[in-house]
Length: 515
Image (cartoon, rainbow, N blue to C red; front, side, top):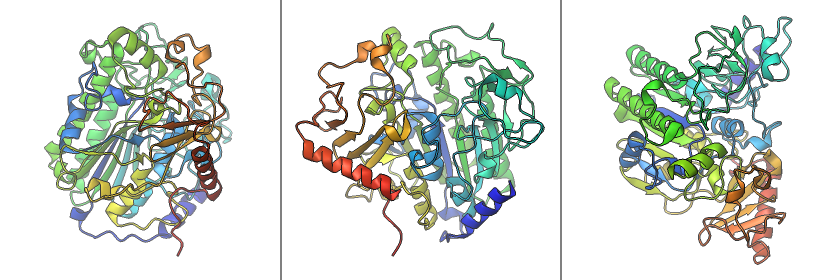
């Protein structure tokens, strides 16, 4: 642990901060990350959505709505790594993996500069509340790291020992949340900073949990006596409120960075009792509606504390909607979580990674504005660096671009030269986008196996050359990715393949900072 701390401090001291000492020049930052929320799940992106999302829509009315924003990956762990580091996850060992329960170690290597560490160096108080899912190291009684996952691995954990590699080792002052997906992954217990204050004591009893089409993701596991399976997001909201209230009371002149990482709307869709039936769009619709309510409560807390006008809010999602959500919401409620895109979570088609991305920053971002800039969650780090006047070092945020000119309405040309995304299988399923052209360096979706999944078979598109080894689409003329034009446009495919390989070999997509 000491070596990780020493290396991290050295990294922080290796780059200069140019931020003004006045807190007024450094906005508070609230980053809200939804889980598996699709582009079509939100009314301000889909006027045919069957779920009311008034608070998320309010962010669009009072801020900027990005229409071409993307998660860097189509599943949880690699997207969260990239959000926290500004580096595509496929560039690091195990960077395509999705951790479960005690899985680790952290993908964030000792010494790697992170978004919270950068902000903390600029005088920010930093807190993470919610799902971490970038890997942790738990220990057995003999001090050896727990290997593997599943129930047997959880049983071997010595919960009196410190948990390593989590948020407080990666730049956050405080953490309250879970190792992985809160109501899915074997370990049903909260972590506070680097400890599990109330360890799991028994196998979960699912007898009294909801039973519906969106409830099957709840795996057998060990549960702590204080872990409320249907109210996890309400606990996260309470903890985020407590952080905000304590911070404003105790450090009113100090900016804060709060990363609120929601459980919703990852399956199982366990909405709290007061939200059941509220959406009139089934259990998953109720879960989306609850997420929207949580957003509203966070906004209300900022207003109550008198800090809303100096708080930059970012709301987005870690990838597209889950297959179960798409199948049943379309069939049962006429609601398309991925509308208008092809694909869903795990897929490298647009529905797997084109996500809602909203920014509200009073006095800076024009209310009701829209941006068509190509952007990624990886860009949050470089943008935050620009806002705080921080010069990023060469070995940090290699895939992050500064979107501040877009936020301020000053961008007159595309900021990103191209965009990389990775599907479910990591480095073997990469795609690159430049202008309207999108090149998938793999056959099929890169994630879900449509031919072998009865629920997905109806979504197979005829005439898309499903056996082609690579794919090329023009999203301007074919936003639904229905016609693979690789054979008709071989030169463009060749150019994009070369650009992809160059980015892989150079280890970056952002230009070098060396003179």
